[in-house]
Length: 290
Image 1 (cartoon, one colour):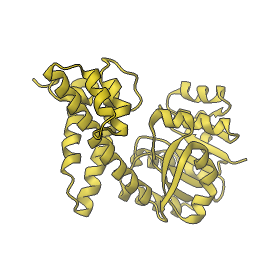
Image 2 (image 1 turned 30 degrees about the horizontal axis):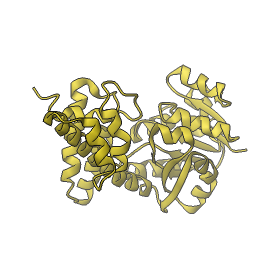
Image 3 (image 1 turned 90 degrees about the vertical axis):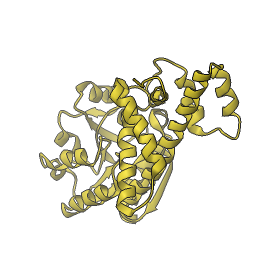
Image 4 (image 1 turned 30 degrees about the vertical axis):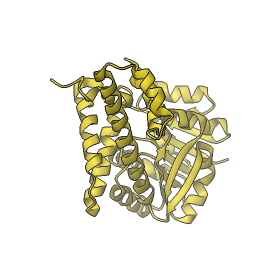
């Protein structure tokens, strides 16, 4: 049985850790919110009182934290990485700029451990169902040692490259498309409202036409709600589209659509909607002006 130290039991991390526990992995979890670890314990895992305790003796460390800087802090600020089992693998599943994932991998490897760059897509629904898409940048050896756990959390696990940073590159491309698509859907629904037509009827029409997309079908209904449940927050796209722009700038790519979408998510966040469902970016088109 693989012993997993899981750090970051947020809206995505907690259901991911629960899925691992339900599928027979020995999962010890930690989060700065004590209640999250206790919820994992109630689902068959174990709660740790510190990062070091979560990683102690772990063969696989999974970090589902905010960004690369937080992952580095978790591993090195109190030297928690030294408590891993010899030869353990560290899987950073947060969305990171490719260059930062590669730099973190170099530091982890220098400490004597394997490293997997493995961001995910699928949101809370995919995390809960164990049906995430997981994009992996890792050596064949590191990937093989973590593959069973990754397969438990994802319905599509793809090794897109043999070095860290490759997974983050795939995630940046994914988030560019998701963010632009979502912003466009929000603009369309805002236009429908402004024109005074039945927005639910318009959504039904376009969801079954050539204009349809997964993001429109998933987020569109929540654009019609004043306070929809949060499956992914506005601020996630503020961060992720920022990574897209950073990644594009590093390679000299032109990303004007990503930049335009980023501005709308930032506008929604500045208006106090940062923690609300990302479907509420629609309110940045007209409703928040002035």
